[in-house]
Length: 280
Image 1: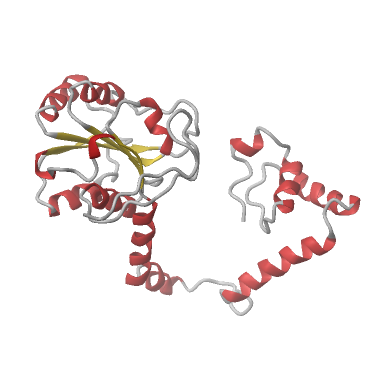
Image 2 (image 1 turned 90 degrees about the vertical axis):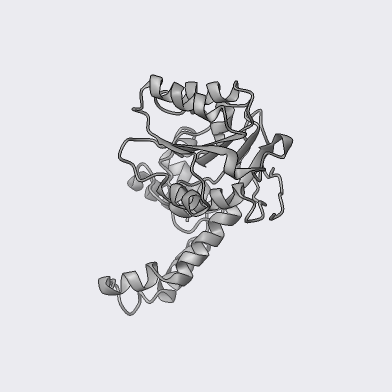
């Protein structure tokens, strides 16, 4: 199954029809969200008639889709048992697997002075930068830090006034190390990605303080391009609670960090790069 074909990386380079045909040629079976579904269908039909795609190739995709539906029982029951959803979604096994995936996804891109894992977590200031006031972002991070008896934690939103951010920056500069855990929307892609409100100025002030600053991006991996002078850079590729927990575990050396970039970060690191750090 493709990702959404309406996304800029595809839609800006190809017509809806050509993108659909190319995806099938590449081996996709399901075309997700083409900008113009009718145009995509017409293009696929035309490609078969012209011999660019074979009818056999289309049949192979159909067979795989039907097999997948049969595997989950859709040939016997098309409707979902709403009462049974929680038994599957909230199962301990599913939660453990989700956490395992999040742990393995953490990728260390930069690590000057072996800033990660943290040398002295008790004397480290943690600043959680959320994307909006009232957001639940950072709640799992706060809980995890509290469990580890960490007290110097500041949860901030873009509406915090500059005078308050300056005061927090002064407090953080007294710590041995500083960790910025920033929620960065994954919607921004490669281009100019910045943090909201006064967060960019806060980050620059902390970086210029002379203290080692570790930046953790919970979401977009390109965030480091805006703050190239940080001592260390971690990315989780996701803002979900399991990723929040994984980020804390990685900072404290409780898990091995062995993730690798699925993208290139221009001017910073190439596809496949990742600094391996063993569990402490």
